[in-house]
Image 1: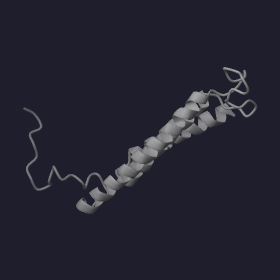
Image 2: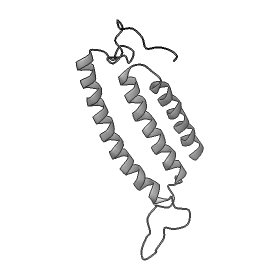
Image 3: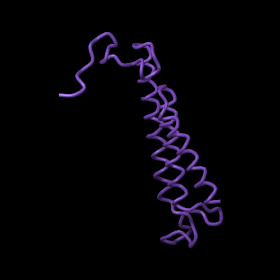
Image 4: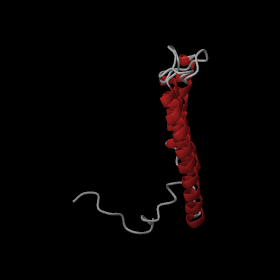
Length: 125
């Protein structure tokens, strides 16, 4: 089971990198969200996945039972999900405002600092 989920995490990484290399802002944002989910899944696999023993200390024990999953990666992933969602929402609003003001979603057409009709800077000095 761990190998299948690790392979799924690899597929998420490949798809995220493909989306991040696109010129469209929406694809870039989806790639960023997908790479965050891939990292979360990879951290979850690194903390072991098991259904047999819960990752909590039962009774008066100080540590979880042998063979239990590590609870620390699960807590980190919950925090990462909240932070990743907030960052995705902020970037989505930022991309929408950029689309409203520039009327373009393509990053090549969004070059406000480099107008097309101006002379180009020197290529060497």
